[in-house]
Image (cartoon, rainbow, N blue to C red):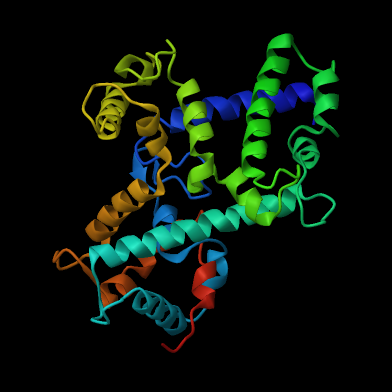
Length: 313
């Protein structure tokens, strides 16, 4: 892939990332599926929320009684008071745990993809090579194979962000990341020692006047969006503005990628979909009855966790 093509992709990724962060329920750095696509709730997100991640095809090929048994036993494993009911707090714990599973699974896959020499460690040169095609940071900086100075500056800005994230994730400062440290590099929202850097990065995309806060105007996307999108943006701004001062702090902007907030919203949605008797909680039967609802999307990417659940509970 030529450098101009790489930079076009990088620019597109930066633009898409900024737009996604304006949508409700965004999880900007996670491997979790988008909860809403074109205004419609994404069933893949429900699948990941309850069952973890990967290879739904294998699960769907199992006999129905086996699928139902495994889903029943998975639900029972989260029924901490053993009353065959999943209360909202139990469902929240379940969803958060599944998100963590999905995130970690994604981070491990990225670690192995970037560990080119398969020595169990990740160097920044390997990251540079996988992501940009250069053998070192110095080679990238010295390269003249860029379409323009602007494209080169965009690439170097992205690399600078990665350098700082790598250095922060490298807790023992040995200039390599082991598998555990690499999770913090790929999943900075899940690791408190990465928060300050991520807050700074999040603010850089919004705080145009550099006053340390994001105003409503700065939070707004361009004038080309329709009225519904604009209303959703402002509703999202209001949700993030916890202290009601009509501006967003770095902490409030950072909360856009918070798994806990995402999980609470997903619990609300799952109760709406699966709670057939509307008693505010889910019976094991209600969860199993919604199997087809949760597996209705052809764009599937979940299910691996179900394979670790025994057929007998």
